Length: 344
Image 1 (cartoon, rainbow, N blue to C red):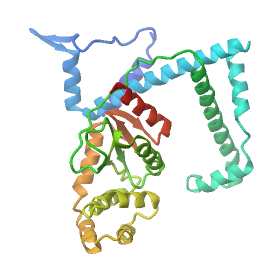
Image 2: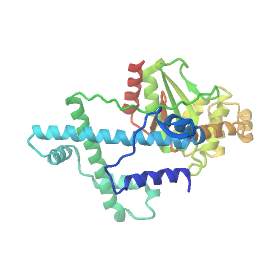
Image 3: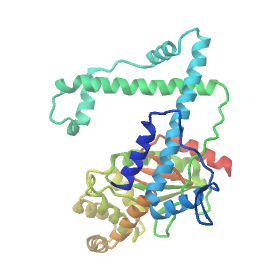
Image 4: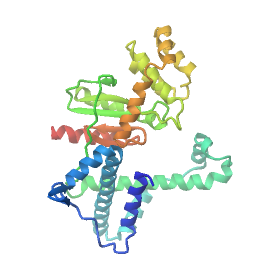
């Protein structure tokens, strides 16, 4: 049984206990977990040993607990705000929410279903548009309803009672090497570190958001890139990571970085060399660097480092050590940055 599976199994046993009122006891770091003769083993000792022996699992477990608590907190806040708004409107919470969602959701059109089908044709497993249309319609409708619910709750949060959240997001120490490409001053109050993959569509999707953050916050933020190619599903990503570092030898790391994200379907070896030529790089030097695998170890280092931090998907962004997974919208990153600036 793997360590991760064992952890999940333990969580499941707790969740499926026949005595749901019983909860794991929260123990402070200084509490004694065991005694070995005269030696006291504390919770802190356990956590430090766990972090040393299996840092990836430790990081993932800490993040998982926070994510679960944060989701529960968001649900409690939303339910409370909806209930209060429904009471003022002399409606039931469900009735109020349905009425507000209905105002915001437009019916999915045949044209939208067709466009979605064409954009995702490779995931349709050979099914025709006629066969899959009802499923697509339900998916798009559910998606719109979820977005509408978020909008309702967002409006209620703005106009409702003050909400002071004290739940602390875990912070991880992410080392920065001189070899990590970066933009911005090392003394900037905000450090945004991205573990990313040049072939990942979600990484490409978040790029404009990161550029917008850079334009908005200027010298208050430092951007650092870490390679994390998911080679099992993105076979060209590893070599693309090498190519960017080869371009960096000639002072054009970020230029090739941008080209590869703009042309994610053109990341074969010949494509990378063509992009370098287009950028005016010395092709003989670039090609020799790429063919020799000069920076393969550097790309592997990024993957290993991300794994130690519990990174298992891309993009994963750390803002002053706080982890955000996926192509989050601008507002999520901006809110985190504003919080960090306020703390400073």
